[in-house]
Image 1 (cartoon, rainbow, N blue to C red):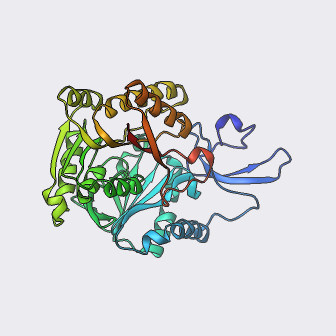
Image 2 (spheres, rainbow, N blue to C red):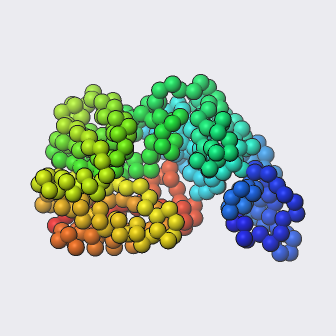
Length: 376
C-alpha cells in the first residue's frame, strides 16, 4: 500500500510496527508491516478477516511456502533454490534462499527487522538448516549496517558454501555475493541449455558466475566462452567449472573467460569471425523504472543484433529478460526485430517463464522471460 493511498494515520509508527488497515466504513481490511521510510508505506501480510500475527501465523506462512517447493526438497539433485519468494509467497520485501545446509534471509525493507526472528524460528523448526545468514538490501543496510552478513543461527561461513543444481556443483558467497550469492531463477533455462549443448561451441554473455556455462559443458559442449564485465564473477565461474571436473564432459570442454562490456566483446568477436552453435544472452534488468522501458527494449534489440551475427547457420539463440516492466510480448518483439534488422531472422521454438520456486502471486510479480530460437 503506497503512502498516497492512505487517507489518515492515527499515530506515527516505527518500521516494523503492525499496521491495521480499515476501509472507509471503519471495517477491518488488512494488516501489514508499517514502513515510514518508504513510499510503500504498508506491506500487506493478510487481508480479509482479522487474524493474530503471532508465532503460529508465521510458522504456517513459512510452511505453506515450503510446501510449494516440496518436489525440489524431495530430491538431493538440487539443493539450491528459493524458499520464500517475497510478495508472491505473502512475504512482501523478504526472500529466503537455500544453498545446501545454509539458508539466506534477505530483507528489502527495515520493516522486516523486528520480525526476522519469527521467520528464522519457523525455518529452523521446518527445515533444520546448519546456519541462517541475514543479508540486507542497500537501503536497509544503510540504516542497519551491523546486521548485514551476520549469522542468525550457526556459524558464519568463512568461504563460499557449496550446493547442487540438477546434480552439478556450484558455490555461493552467501556473505558478500550478489543478491544472496547466486542467481537461482534461471535454473530451468540452464538445464534446457545443457540439453542442447552436445558437441556445441557455446557463448555465454553476461555469464556472471557461470551457471549457463557449467550446464553447457556438462551437456557436452566442446568449447564455452564466458563473458562478463566482473573479473571476480568470472573467477567464480572458473571455480564452478572446476567443481564439476569429475565429469569427463566438463573436463574435456575448453573454457575461456573474457572480462569486458558485453556489447564491445560481441562486436569484437564478430570482427574476428568467431561463430558459435549456441549463444546465451542473459543481461541484468535494463528497466529499473517505467521510464526506462523504451531504452531497455532498444538495448535488447541491439544485443540480439550482435548475438545473431555470432550464431552459426542453424544455431540457437537464447535470450532472457528479468525486468517486470518489460512485457513478454514487447520483449519478444524487440528480440525478433533486432534479428531481422541484422538479416538473421529467428524461428522461435520455446518461450519460458518462472521456475516452481519463483511463483507468480500477482501480475506484476512476473518478471522472468526467455526466448529459445533457431537463427536462420
